[in-house]
Amino acid sequence: MSDIATTTAPMQRVTLRLGQIRVNENNVRQDLNLDEKFLKSVAANGVKVPVVVLPLGEDTYELKMGHRRYHAARATKQTEEERDAIEVPAYVLDPSLREAGEDFIDQLIENDDNYRRGLTELEQADALFGAVDAGMKQARVAQLTGRSRTEVSRAVRTAKAVGERTRSLLAGAGAYDLDLEVLAVLGEFDDDPAAVERLLEAYAKNRFEFQVQWERDDRAEQRAREQVRPQLEAAGVRLAEDGDLPQTAEPLSELAGPDGEPLSSEAHAACPGHVATWAENPREPGEVEYFCTDPDRYGHRPPQEDAPETEGDQVGEQPQATREAKPSEPSREYVKAGNKAYRAAEKARQGWLKDLIGRKTAPKPLAAFVTAQLLSCPKPVAQWVGDAGRRDLVKELTGYDNPAERAMSATPAKLTLLNFAVLAASFEKRMGEVRTWRTDNAARSSVYELREIREDARTWLSFLAEIGYPLSSVEQAIVDDEPYQEGEPEACDTDDQTAEDSEDTPDAVSAEDSEGAS
Picture 1 (cartoon, rainbow, N blue to C red):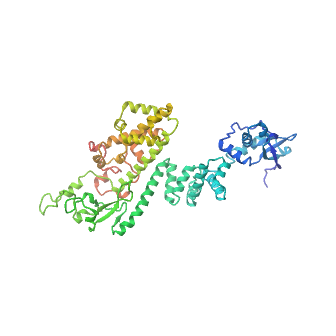
Picture 2 (picture 1 turned 180 degrees about the vertical axis):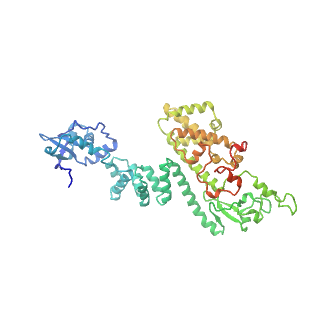
Picture 3 (picture 1 turned 60 degrees about the vertical axis):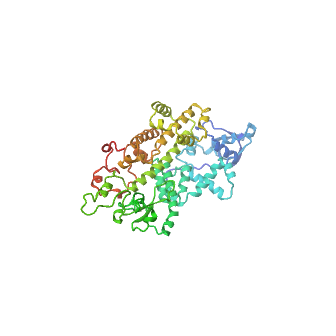
């Protein structure tokens, strides 16, 4: 038998006018926090949860629990007479069963977060969806809950989209504190548990926006490819999926036909090595590129390259040696994965910049950065400030068709953000080269000023990180001046001993050893 004695104080349920209730002067709550949503709800519904009172005699009562409800109800009327006439449900305590100090314990139990929990965003969305699903109009739901119709509509859509599989993953990850915006994205990928897991992992690492963009790009790519696969199959063209091409494969664009011109897919169709694979074209994710799996075996060679000399000629093997002398390149799969990550990061970053520039006030370091860049005039500023493409990007980042006109009436804080938008567009245009993330010699030899572009990108991304931008892994690699590691397949390891002896990077030669390669 328990040693703890319990006493339940009987309470009588009544209806009281607010004019009969006196506020408890010993209430410890200092901030009633009567926000607009709460006030709208009380105005539409009245007080639903009974207040708790103690009789004082002469038909008056002292308020013990429910101070926010009491003051919110009074705030819905204009005059004292109207306020005093408001009726609310109440429980009346028996004074004879109260002990000294119990008022304060009741306040603690009623309001302490350790004793009660509000609904999570998903639970709130479920409640709103339940009301609508039961037949209540969304406009009425909005009125009764103090929300806007847009908020109700978005919550209902989210609750409907987040299915049982995603809810199970959320429960398994203990992810109960996600806001409605994040939940809406998870609902978007409800049919792909692996994507939801990646998104939850990215959320935990503060890289959610990047992962959202990557997942959307990947889904668009997969859907476009699904449209093309049956066409290739019907045409009898063998398809090599990402990672399936042998190392000996070469694109037809780098091989010559009988006329010395690059091989067309039609002319090469009968070759046993004829194969299609997915091209890297973000604008047309379903586009294919044609390859020969083994040009040497099937007698193809690059344009302008003579046929091998007859037996006994000293230079008979030179064409193959020439191809091997090209700057070492990372695997095709690694490059495609890095490019895909870089493009997703660019979209997510510019979305973040747009939100930042749309604020009313600027982060403290912004003004100093803008001033320093304008005074030093580095290459991104000097090259892109007057460019038409930069002006278009400024419009996109600011949301204004005529930013200069908007600047005429802007506050000083907003002017700082508009000036920053000009610099942001300039640096973003400078980083428009997708190979900025690469450190290999092949990229450096094919892109003019790649080292300088990467250095400018490092300056820009470092500053954004300073003011709160969450760097993706590909951006972090640029800031750290390290090769991008994520997405490097194990199959990228080459049999070449030089590659095996190099650092664990896609580079075959270090940056220091390739000075002047650009």
